[in-house]
Length: 370
Ligand code: DAH
Image 1 (tube, rainbow, N blue to C red):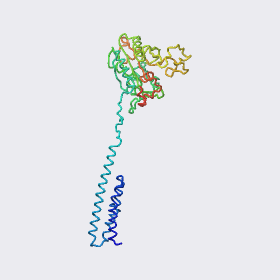
Image 2: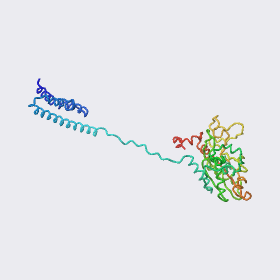
Image 3: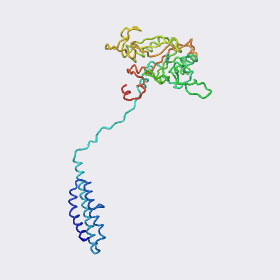
Image 4: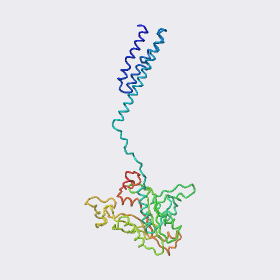
C-alpha cells in the first residue's frame, strides 16, 4: 500500500470511529482516554501527522489540511461531549439526595474556678459575714514570721517536724533565713505588726511541707483566722467556730473541742466535727473498742473518721502572750483567739474525696463533678 493510501485509510478510520467512541464514554476519565486514542501523543491522528514527510510533495498539502481539519473536528466533538458529561454529572448531583452539612460543632469549653478556689472564697465569705477582714500574706516568708515570732524556740523540733522547704541563700547568709511558709499563721504576725487591736482577720492560701502521700501533698491550702481585743475569751472562739462549722457542715452537726498543743496558743485545742459520711457520732462509741458502724449495717469501718464518728478539722487556741510581746501588743491588756485549718481537708470531707491527689491532678473529668 502506498503511503498516500495508508494515510487516507488512517484518516477514514479515525473519522468513522471517534464519534461512537466519544458517545460510548460514560464519564470524564473514559472520554479523555478515548480522546487520547486520536489526538494524544500516540493517537491515531498524531501518528498520521508524523507520517507527512513521507508523503509525495504534491499531495502533502491537501492531505495535511484534511488531517488538520479532522483533528479540529475531533477536538470540537471532545469539548462538546465533555461539556455534556460535566453538565449531566452536575445535574445528577443537584437532583440526588442532599448533603447534610448541619453537624453540630465541637463548641468552646469555658474555663471556671478550681473547686478549691471556690471553696476558699466560700470560707472567706463566711468569716467576712461575721465581720472578719480579709488579708493576704506571701508564700515565701521569713523564718521569724513562720516560727520565731509565733513562739517556736530556736531549733524547736517543730521546725523539723514541719519539714520545711527553705529557700536557697547566697553564701554567708543564714541558710534558714527564708522559706516557703508551712502554715498561714504567718499572717497573724504580719497583720498584728501592721495594725493595732481591735482586729479580726482571716486569710487563706497555699502552704508547703515536705509531705506526699494519699492524704498529704507538698502544697496544700489553709485558712487562718484570729481576733484580738480587750476581753476576748475562749467562749468567743467556741461560738465563732461552732457557728462556722455548722454553717459549713449542717446546723445539727456536733462540734467537739479537745485540748492540744501549738507553741503560739495557750490553751490550745483541736476541733472535731461529727463525721458527715457515716454519721457515726449518732451511736455511742467507746474509744479503743467497737468502731462506729457504717450506715446500712455494713461491716466496713468508715474511711473518713476511721470509725470514731468524728473528724479532726482544725487547730485553735487563745493567742499566747509571748506572741503579743513579739508584735508589741500589751499582753496584760489584750487577749485573742486564733484558728487554722486545711481547705483541702474540708473539700475532702465535704465531697467525700478519698485521695488528696485528685484535687491537684487537674483532670476535668473529676473536677467538673465537684
Ligand atoms: N498552724 C497550725 C498548723 O498548720 C494550725 C493552727 C493551730 C493555727 C492553732 C492556729 C492555731 O491559728 O491557733 O498545723
